[in-house]
Image (spheres, rainbow, N blue to C red):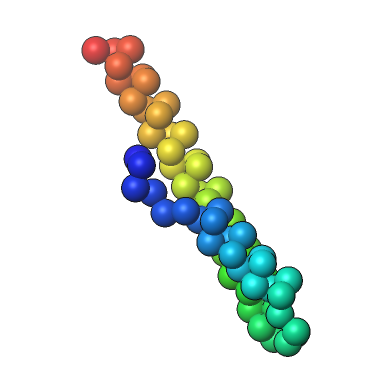
Length: 62
């Protein structure tokens, strides 16, 4: 799974952009984007853990 998207990296970029922004609407937009990227990262972690568990179970049964 080396080609997975870097959701946390994108979130960090959005946070940095928000911190650097002088406009409220731009800051808010970047903070919303950061939250969305972090949510995708959590989802990716759950899917990866589920896949590992499923593969381990299949290996035990083989």
